[in-house]
Length: 130
Image (cartoon, rainbow, N blue to C red):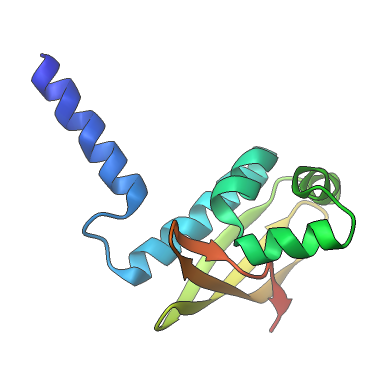
């Protein structure tokens, strides 16, 4: 029984780290992690696992703690969803076209930029209209 538990744990860790997944799959997984963290109002995950260090730094230069900025962002979004329609990989950079929806707001087709860091793919921008 311990062996099966250990294999399951190893498989879960590998999936989270992107073992064996293509860059396209890793980018899509990071976007889904972003969507899940926003839906659950999980500022810590966004700041430490999803957003690129350069984006977090831009927030702090603007005088905001990343988690404070994310809580402000959460206040403007209710029931968010994100659908990924297209991912393009360009070396250590990627772009994704996403359809973002939230309760009481019109759906928006947006472009999200990602970079591949030492800790995997991270969002370099939150979204820009397409």
